[in-house]
Image 1: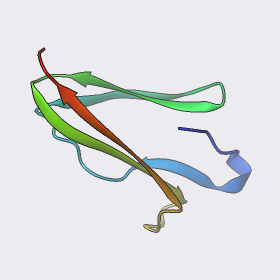
Image 2 (image 1 turned 90 degrees about the vertical axis):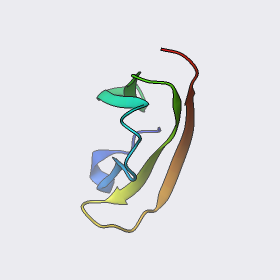
Image 3 (image 1 turned 135 degrees about the vertical axis):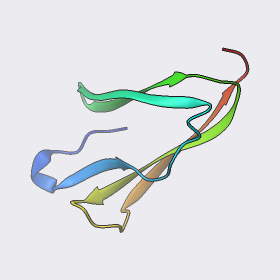
Length: 74
């Protein structure tokens, strides 16, 4: 996800729970101009990872990204 300048007050947040039987969140970090989120596959199945761009703690999303994940074997 593209990183926003801190002065904008915009942050990417996980917007939906993921199926923890399929993936587990490990870490996230600023890497150059991007934010990288790392998940570990823990079981076979499908889940969706959704992040929303928000200003502070507000629930209103200004943008969103969705990743459909399929783990076929562990």
